Figure 1 (tube, one colour):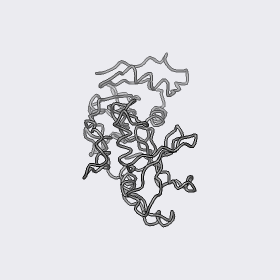
Figure 2 (spheres, one colour):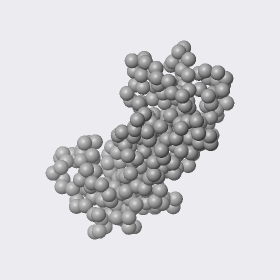
Figure 3 (cartoon, one colour):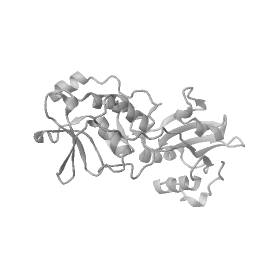
Figure 4 (cartoon, one colour):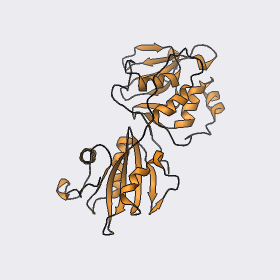
Length: 281
């Protein structure tokens, strides 16, 4: 669905964009597929930077008129449909069940202009969290499917022996897989994954593997010689500890899909994603 050019009256004389204006423009596009050409004197870099502050690092679909040959439906190809072969530079963000794209494209008269585009994103059906006692549950595989993760491993070459030697302890295998797979970023743009455990609470017997902007620390209770048996403990901003009889990947899955979990994100989001902090070209 094509959208009309946005009137320049909506902007200041300097054509300055803000997060609020970008959100308003996205609201104008509404749900489903849509796009709009923006005034030509708008700075495309600003248009790219603002969504980055909301959705994390983008994926580059088109650069200088050349489309990444790996782009497919799982990587935002739907964003390019309205422009046919006229896209010049398009960057994409996965946000829930939407693709959001910014950049520049030539209009039907051949003039290169800034554009904002959205498209529906197919995400896997959410998987119900099963009992932690079930045998054979690969919680990392479940986490990948829940988030619709399709990118290659972001940090496959982490030197875990060096990290573990420096920390003086082995680390849980599911956590190491999470870091290798997702890299730096946050689940639903909220639950931030530490790239190595923080030791701020070590005197309390805790290592911090993730956290939130609400000052909650997601930790392990370092209990015993087998890190794959360390239970998760949430340390709240006021110092209260809440224990959970599970490991990190299972905890993350349950937070994402279980609306009854005390730290549930399922109450706020119908679909789930991992917002990466490092741009994937």
